[in-house]
Amino acid sequence: MKRMARKMLINSCLAAVIAVSMAAAAGCSPKKDDKSSETPTEAPEERPTEIPTSAPAEIPLAEIIPEESNLTDEHLSANGIATRDNGLMRKEMSSQYLIKHYMGIGWNLGNTMEAFRTTDSDKVSDYETAWSAPITTRETIDGLKKYGINTVRIPVAWSNMISDDGKYIISEDYLNRVEEIINYCLNNEMYVIINIHYDRGWWGQFGSSDPEWQEKAWARYESFWTQIAERYKEYSDRLIFESANEELGDRLNDEIDETTGYAVGTRQTGVLTEDERYDLVNKLNQKFVDIVRGTGGNNTYRHLLIAGYNTDIDKTVDGGAGRFVMPRDPYNEVNKLSVSVHYYTPSTYAIAETEDNSWGYSGTWGTESDIAGMKANFEKMKKFYDEGYGVIVGEFGVCTAVKKGIPDYYYHVMKNCKDMGYLPVMWDTGLWYNRLTGLFKYSDVLEKILEITGADAEIPADADITGKEALDFIEEAEFIKVFEWEGRWKKNDGSNTALDGGKVSAEDESRFVNTTSVTEGMNIVFNSWGYQVFLSPDWSKFKKPCFRVYFEDDRADVTGALTIAYCDAPNGSWNGTTTYEYSSGYINEYVPIDIGQLEKHNVLMITFGNSPVVTRIELYDSAN
Image 1 (cartoon, rainbow, N blue to C red):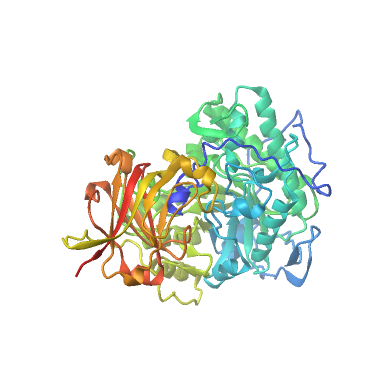
Image 2 (spheres, one colour):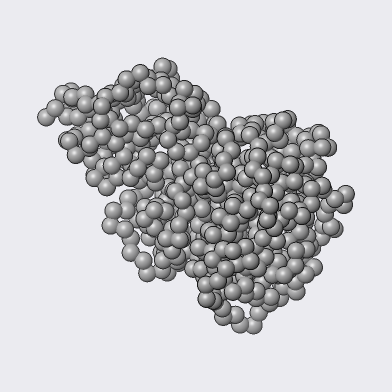
């Protein structure tokens, strides 16, 4: 569930809303040896095949099928990528059986291959790191394996590097990089899911009143899936394709820029009625199955993941009305299809990070009613399970570590899925797992993961815990001002527009940060979408550090909550997150900095829940 704007700030969930204002189309020409150059450039007149009214029956298995290895000696794939995958396809194994017995629990490589920039680049790494994710390594995936995590979902924005000739040819470099990450997983005997994610929000073209935009949307969807399916069809059944993310549903009516066709906002400006959107979702999912199966080879038997309506449980189940239906797959005697939904319920707990919002907030979870309500929600998906389909909760999680009851929330999601034969895949953009060290960052959440997976892995000695109370404001009167920054920092450029990853460029700086003066040695860095500031002076010289912030306008609806955390480097993975609500009165207070956290992670991160203009940041130390 990526409602994209939030991922930069919270490194947590919600990928789809983060870039609703993006408009630049990629302009990268394909290499001459691009194997996908014969991709169709126009949508055929008859798009979907017949939509079925019932699912093929699941064929029960008398005994558990042994888990065969997918590994062989290292060799080069047809695309020249190093792999150990042997292309094993277990034709008799259904998706439901695979999920229940072998896929375990999963983890999302969030904010990485689905990240994008406002300016185009011909370097894949510029996109992979655009939202502060580090370059994904083999060690990142190895670290997950030791915790018993057996599935990795890789969200992908294929529009990042495509041809500008209207043929939607994906860059060979981008296809190669995704294939490298796929193999980090496959070489670990893990399962991996790839999809077409938010992808700059072109999905709203489907709901346009202009038939030309509708045709372009169909052409892009078909071109992408033809290229993806052809490119990776040699791989074993541990590689799974997913038709879309959360965009198959209401977001087909998203507002688009009339020049670029990419999303410009979250307003619904399309012309499709809800019934028409359901019908279109069914047709898109059917077309996905048709394309993949039509490429032949291993794709004839590949397990496919079908995005539910909005990936929302209630919208997908549809109260029994039957407007959402699974596609037809006549190629397999056993069911090779699963349905994907996401779980961030209740949103006031799982999504809302602070009290300073208009749509509700809950800071705790875990009552008997909470637990029963979660189970009841998952039981709704038995409708599909009983028909023989697999069920995958492709994303779940809580978007902050400061709330109470997070370990229980994670445990009950995973336990319900395990009991019901579903696959849970936790959403993570760096909040829970440190990709550089290969270690989980919160011991209480990790304990629940290990309880479910049964893995014998050590809990890191410096792991934090969730739900910690914020330190009290410091009342001491005698302070020494050590460092000061003055200027004008317009947090997040005052909008939900994401800028390029990394350090602020001179060209972008004037958009949201202008420095008037800064004390030498303060070591202050603003990240280049303006979401956070990072401070790394020599903390060893401090006895009791604290800071104060000042604003042009310090009203609650302007500043929002104050969030601080600790990193190993600017834009790095966060630890020790603490949130101070506006109502707690952090304005003009001396906000304490946790020395214990600084001893482990020596960069202080500061950000705010809304989009204030910060005019001064002061660092103090105790005079005593």
